[in-house]
Length: 163
Image (tube, rainbow, N blue to C red; front, side, top):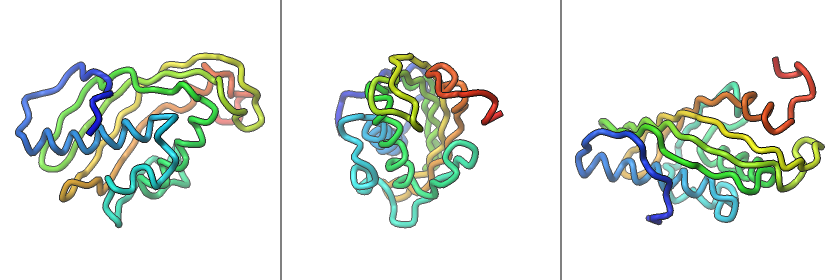
């Protein structure tokens, strides 16, 4: 596993098995949030079970697996080409589950997003995720994130179309 990970701000004492579970999740996040390494599902398939599931109905309604999320996130990163996680704010594991709250930032410096040309506008946001890891691979990923907060900062809101 790579050591290019953001710092962890708060955690609790974990067993070695729990640390291993956290490492799987952090590796998934490192790749999924890398504009250079995330080429979509093939980039993270080795970290996920074949029957993995993803839940984020308000922000990624068409994504049903962590692989779908990697595909979708690769598209977002084509517009926010400098997107990166700045810190893992809270991380802990228990019985195969990992809670991860993280902070991220980036600017619209890449491709157009929904026909909106790159503006250079910057955004900072937070998100939380709950993962379930089975036999060393991600089985489930539930994401909670205020997408509109980020979109407003980037100038991607044209009005109240998402309100």
